[in-house]
Image 1 (cartoon, helix red, strand yellow):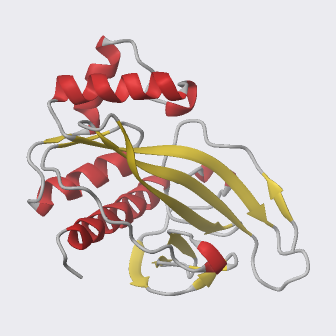
Image 2 (spheres, one colour):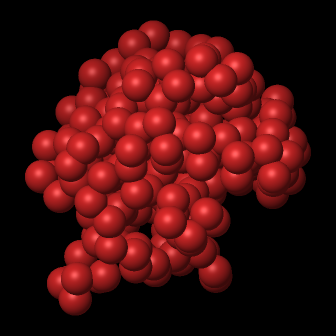
Length: 228
């Protein structure tokens, strides 16, 4: 198999560039767990009405799902703005009842606009990123910030395989502790989509990735509190 780099994300920090894929919109009709796509084990596969699928993974070593890392204790949280996936993630945190308040991406966007701070973390140096997080911590009055940082995309054309080609989009998931003034939690999310045919629309895939990220965070909170 040959892997080549394709255009990196510009405006979708979580995981989707539907323009690369083409095809029509198809509704999500079910979820399958543990499928194997693109050389690693998929955490969740969204099955499409037309038979296609979108795989979501938290990749670790040896092609396996990375273990969930525990999170420190906190109550108030903000979600860095990016796309619909971040909004969906914030909604899930709100409805979980574990965090109060939850500063949604729109509220954080307003703070960034006031301070003339780019929302795209790739435009900031490490020092600028820390300053930006700290400003949001103070103005939103939260203890913790979650942010997704786009990493890029890679293509597997399966030149020597009967399997369909796919494109994998990945992003770093960051957890910034306002009291410690540093990133204390990291994870990685990957979305694998098959090239050609009909695929889910951008909104559907972003919602699926936001749900998966929220599931991951709630699992991490459970580990912190000694749960499963």
